[in-house]
Length: 543
Image 1 (tube, rainbow, N blue to C red):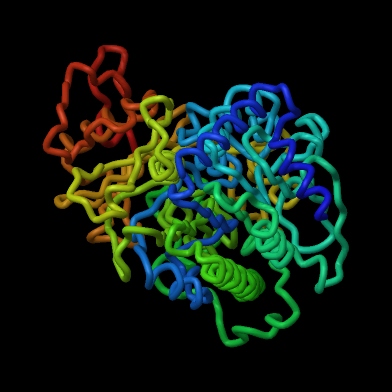
Image 2: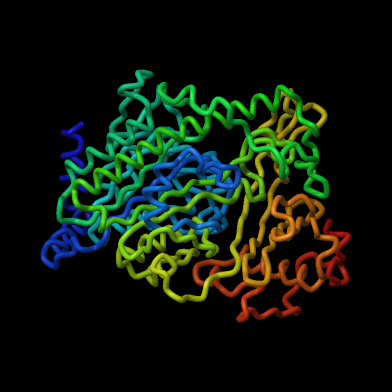
């Protein structure tokens, strides 16, 4: 492995004579001359399917101590889309799905497709960090279709990475293949050398033995945990034996007044379904214990090398998860807090310890924030997100009041054998005929958090528009759809704001929200949900 490290170190993601190689070489020389080693290092640790609303951070005691107690914990961190590949594309590009065009986990949905590689990867934030002299390291799950033959295979190394250890396709713990700087390497099922979370930790620690010592670095470590198949390390296989999925709230509750996909779930769930999701919940926690070890090893290594005080460390997930909420067994994809809300902890130079921030942030903000830390001119990007570096530094800034969440549902053209009565168009179905997705599970939401309001407004796409609205101050578990009772003026404003965000790009995605004092509402722009005579459809017709 040392030879491969050295080869990538010398080639710098391009052969001599290419523009990328020359650009990096020039930046490297500039760094040495101007002493830019003082620029901070940056580490992003990304977990897979880790919720925060249902106790997903509970197993990570060391992570909370090493990062949260020495930095800031965000309590209102969201994802642009509650599914792996669209969400990861948003993290890398700093853009909403309607702008990066990754809509699901398939090649056809633009996940790691040639179109993605051509139009988005060259402008993703790691490539921009590389262009200003950062040495870059990636290890773990990239995008769900990475390594597919029609996506360039394992030889494709995205631009901007000096050291690349990319997992082929989706998360596994054993018996997987990785692209080690463009060369395939297979792993087996021997825990001591093959358990993926530990392998990522070892790759990460070894990076410190090969990087340039006087050049700032960026590391992205993307773990499989706690994604299925939920295979824990052997030493943790008996942990949390008395733990079960959280009861209460929306657990095993019928989703009344909700989209048909939620209402079709069988309530109460069968004993077999509950036992299955309890076991999944327990195993998810078990896999996270190895992530906790990874974080501890990384922080200790940074400290031993006298790099910790000059390093920002971000910890987050690509989406949340549910285990029995509204009687849906296990998955993500839905518009509710348990699926769209994620952990976000940050420590680094200038960040005061033990901070809790209620600021509304989204994963499209990670890219501009990291670039801002590195000193990159954000005006040179087309990112939809905004830097929250001023919030990390506890500066007095005007905070955003709303964000967009969007998802394009997936279904099958064939009837699922386990759910013949639902017909074609559904997917992710369980044996007892509970389906987690469908073609018309396509929605867009405005999530608003301000001093005055804590609302979520969502519209489903379909032959007939369906709306869900929740007041999360009064109803934190989103049990009651208030679309029929909320003030008509608020309904109209939220409808208008959703139109703006669904067509936004760059700076227009950061315009003032409905409950921002700077917001301007023009009723003349209301055109969605009108009948043939141009009248705004009534509340009844929207529900």
